[in-house]
Image 1 (cartoon, one colour):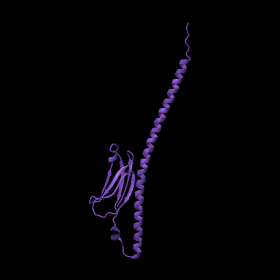
Image 2 (image 1 turned 60 degrees about the horizontal axis):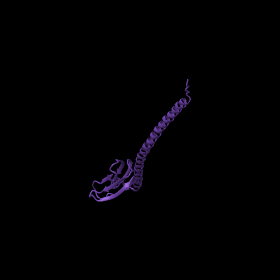
Image 3 (image 1 turned 90 degrees about the vertical axis):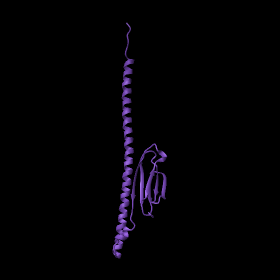
Image 4 (image 1 turned 180 degrees about the vertical axis):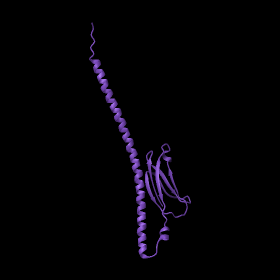
Length: 160
């Protein structure tokens, strides 16, 4: 089995992760991880639990992207054709299949990371635009104020 998870949004971008076997024993545990990849063999048949916890920062919600890939070790033996020539061909096909799975997993992780970075740049862009608008309003206000002040200074009052 293979688990890949990544915190994409929220707080300090860390989360606790635990993998439990069907008999409730802890297979793997990590605290305050932002991203991780875990590969392990399933020794016991049954349902495995993947638990994510945010108890260290309960005030901030987080978005976690994860994927689980389950490989069937017996499938290769069941589907294997007979013969030496076909055996090497079968191994090549299985390697290609595994490579394609890894590429697909990597693409998904990169898409998630790109979404996160895009959201960050959009927020930064919004802040820059708002600051520029405020700065422009301030400069125009200072110009209008200067003109009014200078007009007031040069108004002559005559006493008759």
